[in-house]
Length: 110
Image (cartoon, rainbow, N blue to C red; front, side):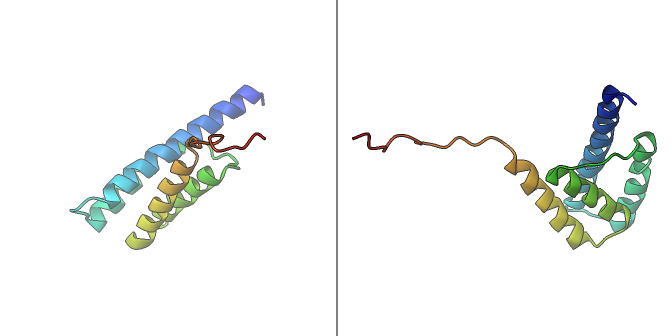
């Protein structure tokens, strides 16, 4: 299998995970959350994974994303799923670039 095929499978799998997770988080955080409707929607969305072949994930964020999706599919508790979703958001936001302000402003050069 070529390197290009592996990358394509990886991207397809990650996009499927992201799409499923975004849908799950949106449904979980609604004010009018209904457990039965949520389960039906998640089972319908689980068909996304039939098209995407699972691949090995080595990044902390992607591993946590996969764990969250597996938790939702295994019918976890709502509070546990929300906690996991918040942790996932925290991991995603950590990887954004943050500039160090005034890095060299008070350096003595004597």
